Length: 365
Length: 246
Ligand SMILES: Nc1ncnc2c1ncn2[C@@H]1O[C@H](COP(=O)(O)OP(=O)(O)OP(=O)(O)O)[C@@H](O)[C@H]1O
Ligand SMILES: [Mg+2]
Image 1 (cartoon, rainbow over the protein chains, first blue to last red):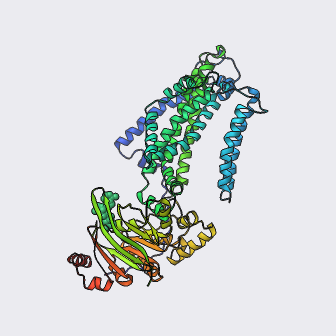
Image 2: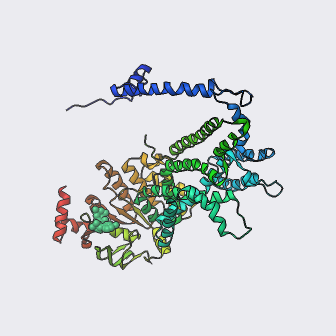
Image 3: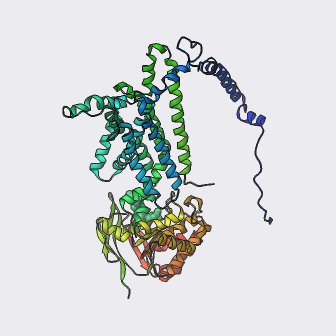
């Protein structure tokens, strides 16, 4: 038998390690690892200098013509010249302030929501903002009473891409939630309709749906009642995206243990309360990474709008590179679009990580 | 003589073809503490889950506080608002803090103001000895603490009846005592309790009646003293022997 003295708590030891030791432990821990490290370094050596030379050191930024731009380096002058087209499409330059305000308002509203923190009326104010914003935004972009109307066939570039993706994301989300709940419903008719809808749309590629929306949908309307082309495309995108959101959320719903439903039922919560307060918050939290993944996929898919004659940012490369003053510069265009897309999508994926952490209630230390 | 707050009449329940509850008849008086025990699969959980309609039954009737249970969702919710349940696996809501777990039903089902609900919740947390954990989340607590939170949550709506389904059997031995202490305190206060448990010490100490179930039937019921000292049926004698030899 032995009795031990009680010990005082000590500080966590400092576990920082030197650079050399880090290298040895992480990059050269064994033979295979070392070979892979060297191989990777060699690949970087092959790629990075070439790309850097083309994109930066041999590149031209100065105001020159296409001929004065060298062929060995990128001619970014072309992007700068065409930047307005890349961003706004054929939106009239004198109205650029309108999309600009749409962005400013979005940032302002997010900022307001942040400021409110635990304010008594936070939910009410945020709900109001969420309802008002789309109305103001579409009024600004499209026009209406006392504001000149700018037809959607003039919209284009990054602006169109963002409009299509945002509308698709925002509108498909509630629809996806409803579909996911419908698929789990105890009512056979609702369940049947949800399943049929989901399985039908899931079996069809987006491009088909866009074609249907732009070619077939008008057949159902009376002569003369012409529906806006962008609007039709947006409806197609929403129909398509809501199904993927629904399936992602269904996965989240299935991960909720039966005990959660039972505890909520046993308290006497109504179906709506149980769903809204207990089940959905948990299901959505689990689904965040997949929801964002699905949004990222949609964002990329908006490039398909080109096929039905809407000019998103990617189609602007086609268009501007056929300008006879700037022939042969589509590489620069594609690289530019790639970088813009990457920045947006990578931000989305980082933001998803932030959300995951914020709503993580595991709270295990 | 006090009134019967729960009346169960010729209750029969099937899971598919499987006859899970066979002609159950019993009554619980107001403020009575009834303990139900029996071997695994004997239908104890099924029985008490019928009382708040977490399980549907096919035959017979259950009356709770004068309301007859039926498919009518309004009546079911009415009964559920008076009957609280504590589960084996606590079933706290992991996305809500402890205090929000407690105030949820008072606010949404009983239309209490936030402040009133919060005060009552803190008072109850105090009673089960974890007031200082109010702002934490369920996963940050030990099993025993979580079950005490679950009991406090069940009490928050001032229920007339408390149902317990093996509240201590998912807990480590050293945590069982802290939960049983809370339950003993409760029993003394005159709340009606229907409790599935194998804690025979608890049954001896506070139960007014003990019911033994096997294969979906009530085999024997008696006052605790007679139940433990002079079991009549062979099956109960065997069961007690097994349980006490553990
Ligand atoms: N959802 C279900 N579907 C089919 N059979 C079920 C279902 N739930 C329970 N049963 C069966 O009904 C019987 C009674 O189950 P019940 O859970 O009431 O037993 P119990 O007495 O609570 O047992 P334990 O002590 O293990 O909790 C068991 O044979 C079980 O297999
Ligand atoms: Mg059980």
